[in-house]
Structure formats: structure tokens, C-alpha cells
Length: 116
Image 1 (tube, helix red, strand yellow):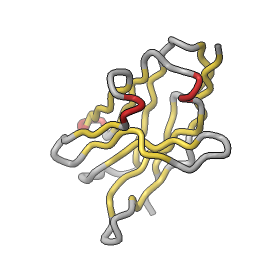
Image 2 (tube, one colour; image 1 turned 180 degrees about the vertical axis):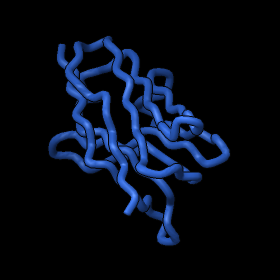
Image 3 (cartoon, helix red, strand yellow; image 1 turned 90 degrees about the horizontal axis):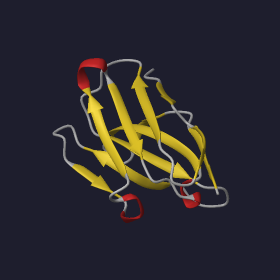
Image 4 (tube, helix red, strand yellow; image 1 turned 120 degrees about the vertical axis):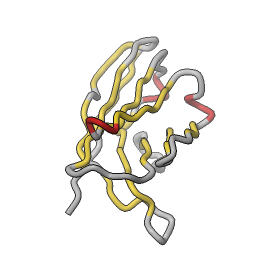
């Protein structure tokens, strides 16, 4: 069973930065993504990267968040700059899109809290 572990969450003031990391238990040569879920809201896609390196970001984070991948160290990152209070939520790493079109592997999430 593949496990995915996120780290790097925390509490920060608005305008600050955080960098999230995601490490699968084995090397995965597939698409990966970051999702987030705010209290009382549905989980939403934040940023994704294909196995070829193609990137797509949610409009709400364009220009502020950067997804990247260090394949040598089997780690996915999400650099988050100029954080806003609305970025608060639990951030999840997802990996490998199955035949159903859904990501197959998910982490447990890491909490990001942005305050004024």
C-alpha cells in the first residue's frame, strides 16, 4: 500500500510564506497534485503537475503558489507566498490518477492557518 505523507503546514500571518512537502513511500512516476479543504467547504484543487511536468493552478493561487517536484528525492512541494486568510485549510497531497479519473493515493493532510 502506497503511503503519502505531507509536512510543512503551520500558522502564519497574512502575507507570509510556507512550503509544503509531500513524500510518497515509493517513487511514483505519475501526476500529482495539491488539494485543500477549508472548514465547511468542499475539497478543491490548488495545483497539479503531470508526469511530464505540465502545471495547472487554481485561479485563486496564481502568482502566489508554486508547485514543484524533486524526482531525485521523490518529493513534491508547494511553495506558498503572500498567504491570505482565505488560504486557511487542510492541504492534501494526491498522486496517480486511476482509470476512474480520480487520484488514487492521498495523504492525511497538513493544516495551514493564516491569520491577520
